[in-house]
Image 1 (cartoon, rainbow, N blue to C red):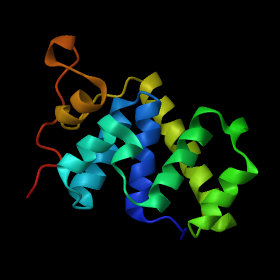
Image 2: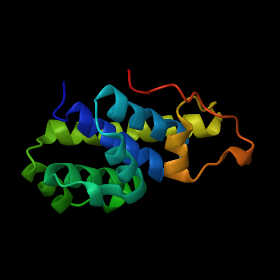
Image 3: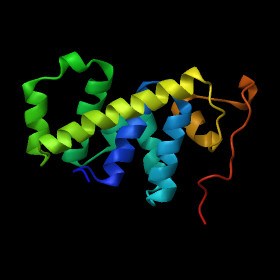
Image 4: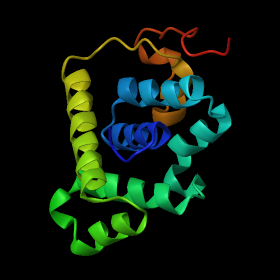
Amino acid sequence: MGELTLPEIQHVGIVVSKANGCAYCTAAFCTILNYGLDTDESYVKDLITEGSGVIEDARLKTILAFALKANNDPKLLSDQDMQDLRATGLTDKGIVQLVHLVSDFSSYNRLNLALQTDYDYRDMWRTVAFGWNPESGEPAGDNSRGLGK
């Protein structure tokens, strides 16, 4: 058990996967946040198009900023970044959990990108996040997956 909530983890997965250009993982995390955790679809769409600017919660904004920095250039992480996380209530345990999540999600992204994993989520997610269109030649996803009950 870690210190991050399941919704926080899904947010990290979305922003890291989008930053790494992985449509498969981005859609997977969007589906979990939207369908699995009953988060409004329009909010999830705004998150993947506008980033953390749509987030009002200071803790979540700090977590996502750290996650993107750890993903994009971990050498740039500073003592101030750690202090900012601690100010949100994370301890060393939570910080390690967050870095581990970024590492795992980046690894999943690279795996799916390298193996060109068949996309089997709603096309809407990759369209919103990456501008995919049916004319691209890539097969359509499973457009029933993650729809409301």
